[in-house]
Picture 1: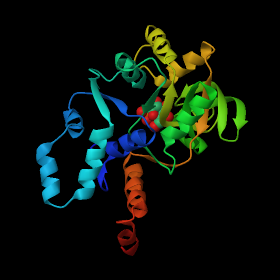
Picture 2: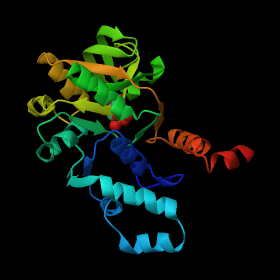
Picture 3: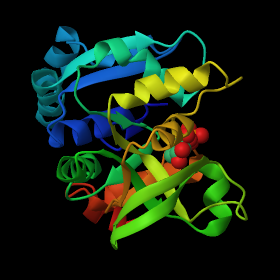
Length: 258
Ligand code: G1P
């Protein structure tokens, strides 16, 4: 799915572009069986490059070359799907001692200032972990991790007081949903490890962050600017295709005429 083309490049390429545009160039992919095509996509492919050059597809060639030149890609396999928290734990060895970002490729966030760089700015300012949130209708909260506000710092920035993964509308502490971008402190690893010892089933990243709060770590939530598309469901995907086409200077005018 990540490799399906969203107009002119695979969905994952759009997300990697967001990372690169946010000055994040070391990327660790947590993959699983059957996803080796993903690894190939981020490797050099002389035959493909020659073909693109020959057929005059300079734009595509340039965008692939940009990736290869600026990105450093590592791939780690998650042998069993034990949840997002477990996937993040698998990256621990590959990550340095700094804060790091988590990007869920099912969430595409289109914005003039890349969503991740909005979060990084806040993380630097607050010297703390920051989660991207957006308001969703109450009836949609069971699809998301949801934050509870401890303190409103500005209309878009909140000190987080609690976190719940996929609450029912009546139990949700707000309608501010986590939208697949995080900047996290290294403390998340110890928290995930600790809760994994007593959590049966999937290890949720949301629960790991909630545990950080429990340990008095400061966590903020920032209402990111940008249009978010949920590529994980068909309607979200169709929406993303339509909007991406409309916003593209080459394709936009043609789509309007259709
Ligand atoms: C994951 C997270 C959830 C977050 C969502 C955003 O859920 O667990 O907290 O709100 O991504 O897309 P998933 O959609 O993988 O079930």
